[in-house]
Image (cartoon, rainbow, N blue to C red; front, side):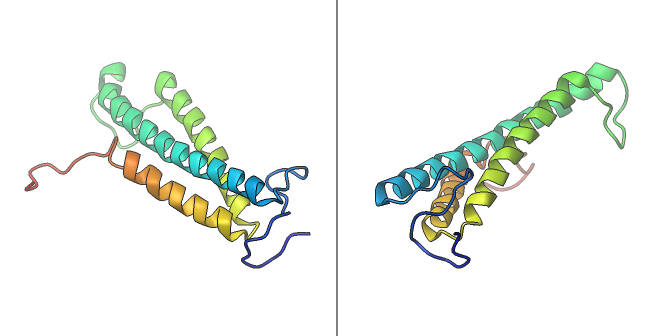
Length: 134
């Protein structure tokens, strides 16, 4: 049975009914897995931002029109964008389900993993300000 308050014990079903880390080693392994998953999620977000900039730059040349309020549908841009979003959403929902176990170790691992991932990949694919002093 799931404990509905913040705790650090084991035995909670984690994503699957049969996956219930109970020992300290199993919980540590799950925490490491979540840390890696969070870093991957932040990398995927940076990867998507990079492609978004690339697609935005190429879109006017692909359709031969001036910029519009709503960008045109370009299958070679929009289908990969949808696939990347689907993978990113899968990661996010898996992390949400882990947080919903109320296991403090999982929550701390997820927060640390997202922070480390943002440190590593957060600046990638972001448009830098033009004319700002360095």
